[in-house]
Length: 114
Image (cartoon, rainbow, N blue to C red):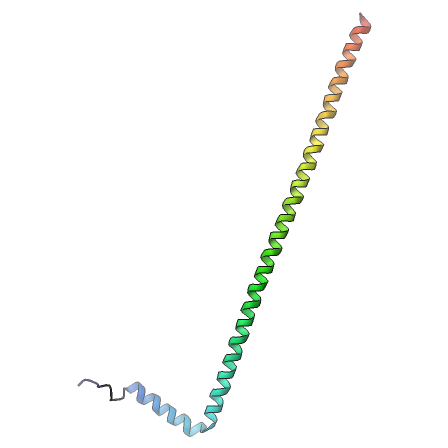
């Protein structure tokens, strides 16, 4: 035997029985409860949306702060590298001056001995 569309299914019958029982137990209050649950659900959805927006905003702010910190660190590292390189060149110049002084002293010594 095939079910036609007009015959209620077992699931539909059970649902209507449940609705009838709820109406008997809770009466008019069930509508009030449903409305309260819907209001609570809507409130929770709004709060969820607000929290998601705050999370996105915080994430954006953190990414900007990290980028700024990264840029600042790169600038400071470059400055330190330049400073170190300048001191290295000064050290090399001092060593060359010593070599020149040594050469001059040798030449002076040779001239004196002549």
